Length: 102
Image 1: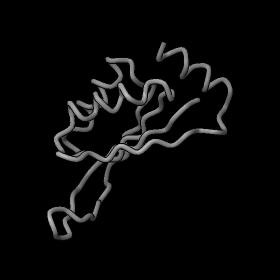
Image 2: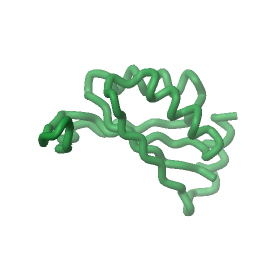
Image 3: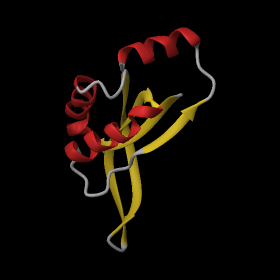
Image 4: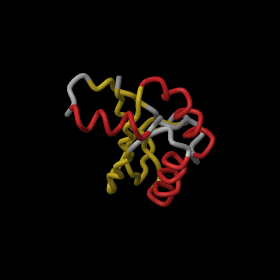
């Protein structure tokens, strides 16, 4: 089963985390979507941040390892790590993804 994992991160840290995830082979691909402006509750008040959204493609069995790598290398105390199962996918892309994270 393939997963798409969403992680928001400050723009200045996005490429560093992306490279770490790929080097540790916990994912096959990361898209960096810049220009994300996030609003959220933090410590009892509404806060905002300029961020990037990482869209990380991996397989289900690697999610725990991926989550540990993100937490160990993310500047936030509570990083956003949200995974979605991909139930429809181009077969050739899925085969490539699975080959890259062996």
